[in-house]
Length: 573
Image 1 (cartoon, rainbow, N blue to C red):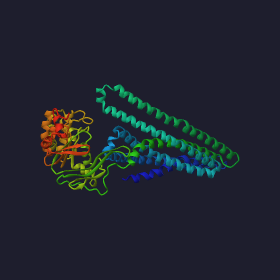
Image 2: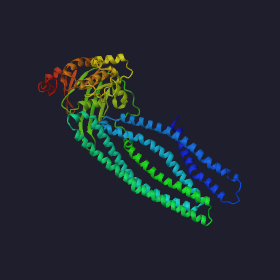
Image 3: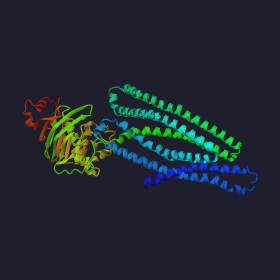
Image 4: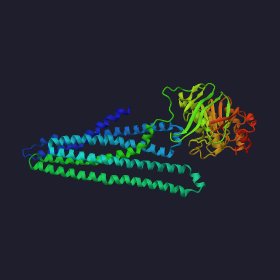
């Protein structure tokens, strides 16, 4: 069933149910009272229809209200599901820069508040706003007909009240927006400290982290108090005085109308009952304003994110990448880090070709552009000028999904999901059989330690894989890469977390993985890349040396030869 089918009826049902209970039933009450005041009314039959109306209206209004609540519950759950899915899809599809510049904890907090804001906002729209304002219009129309002064008084008081409360609500929204921002920072601080709990303990910084958290918590308390006090003092005070004033005016107007013979006692009862319902509506309006601005301020942070386009987007007519051989070509590439205020140029007119099947190592000092090349190839970021092509296809014109499906990437510090080892290894190929998973683990020399675990391949690895050692995480990541079996391989210092013995075992598996595939390897451990087809030395965004290990070693004054001579145990010193 579509959501549209369930969303429109509640908007109609709530006002009808509210009008029936609050404004139509009192008319039957007035009819009964007026008949009691007529001395000629002696037959009980005169009261039948007013009594039936007095019973039937609230009865059917309640049935209508219950059906409306059922519809609202359906829409609440469906709406929250859609918002959660859309928000997750948007966040997970954001660029590399977005995720490194935003606290994961803050994003989680903003997402939670955004999803949870839907229910009170939707409920308020359907059950409160529609019912309150339609009921108000109905009541004013009836009052103008039976007691014009009362109707005019209600209109004037309501207009003044709405104007003042709207003004006050704008400031309250700003206060709550600041409060929500501080709460996001509090959640981010909590997540940051707990995620790095091991570092906190090894540096004995528990007291320092407690102080940081207390500081932000104090700021949250202050912001919450300001927002709550503003609600309590001016807004609720104005509502209270408005209610008292309106009740007093209605009572005086009703008494005068009855004393001068303008209205019957039953009419006075209607006026008083209407005003009672209307004064409740004034309180409802205050609550509605509070609910709306509270939840809008909770949702606005994520709304601002969703309103912005992702930094790296697929073109509307983007096609899937078709890799036949794996030739990679950088042509006149220009790339700049930073924003308009702080730009840092890295590549300018940078060109490079990597023939299909060639294994290439990237070395050089930090900041030379090694890792940036891999990020540009994976299209975590877009080039400013020039193009990057794979088998003649510009990667900016193909879908990001097909591009990354064609590339197996093993980062320097692989992070695993808090799922089983089996699921982590099969992440690049979810349809893999258990036999394929074990075979990949054996090639990565991960099978040995997995077998010794109590739950084997069903072992949960903990958040980010914290239950495993660095070397074990790296081997699981390599097993995942082997199983994915993509035509292009990118290894970002993929053996840096392994000891010498493990490295020797794993290098054979890596060369098996790289065989026949276009491969880029970034390594500080030069022994990892000395057997590759080609080694590039990158300095300040330029290729300063290009050749095999033997050719570069022969360049006595070259950077590679110097780095090689400075090694100790296979690492660059």
